[in-house]
Amino acid sequence: MQDAVIVPHAIKGRGAATRIAHRFERDVRDAFDDGWGTLEDGVQGGVARPITQVTFEDAKSALTHNDSPDIYFDYGLNPYRGCEHGCVYCYARPTHSYLGLSPGLDFETRIIAKRNLAVVLARELAAPRYVPRMIALGTVTDPYQPVERELRLTRGVVELLQRCQHPFAVVTKGSGVERDLDLIAPMAHSGLAAVYVTITTLDAKLARILEPRAAAPYRRLRTLRTLTQAGVPVGVSVAPQIPFVNDDMEQVLAAAWEAGARTAFYTVLRLPWELSPLFRQWLELHYPQRAARIMARIQEMRGGKDYDSDFATRMKGSGLWADLIRQRFEKACRRLGFNRERVELDTHQFRRPDATGQGSLF
Image (cartoon, rainbow, N blue to C red; front, side):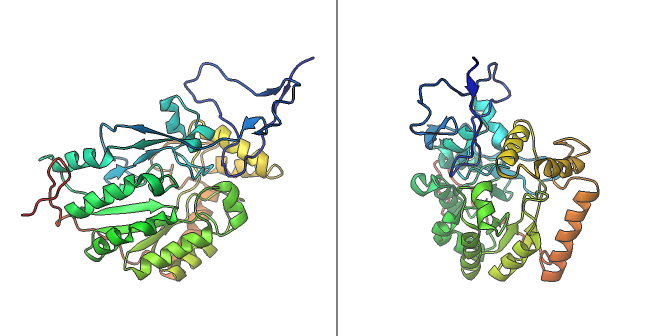
């Protein structure tokens, strides 16, 4: 008699259902029921209910330099590896493979915090060869994910940028950005800061399984209002667009406009590396009746594949379905008034710090 392999089940509060093997792993393991009933205690769907673990690392560098033609920023900065928000669609999940960890549950439960990030950033900004450009915070993982409430690594970075009068933009799904308004608002008034909030859907039930530990949609709208009232330029990201899953783009844009957002952008779903089987598993758990239909539309936008890394199409896709999404987005933005003015942040106020992070007085 063969042991019964445990069928994955959705885990409350987590986007992934399993610790899917990463692409560098030599062995793949499946949980199975050995008949002793040991899976019943503290276990859901054959996987122990995971808790978030935070480990620390000393970063060797703070800024990542972008030369991709389809990305608008020059410098990116991420205080954390992994993200507890647990968004199942996150294109950054496969980066955990380089750490020998799973892009599945490990990505959202094994968080690595760069404890020396502000010091390293100060050193990089102080270098004579450094040329100031807008720094985007949260280009890979969210700088205001739950662990930031205690560790305050993002706040340390923002404090340094304020002392140096260095322009930056934040991309987040976390309402925790409101905590740092005492720093962000004065910089925004000087043309040095902007915030972009991602709102994938207004459907709270969908958001709870799609991005389980991110702020609720209504809470993100409140964040937009709070930032707007404080004089911070705000925008909305309605990314990613997933056919037959989050089909309320127009409603999201309308709600974001009413809350104060004046710029908007989107991407379509990307499924690089391990993200493809992980998302397919999520579909089978939550949308089994339409999983094949959803994947067919995704592949239609990727030339028949799950993913195509071509710079010309990786963000917006190609083909009829991608064109339909583009038309819907552009029509809604024109009707509401989005993107009529570009937010330009000022790099001329930059004051080079010394290597310890203190700004110059002269």
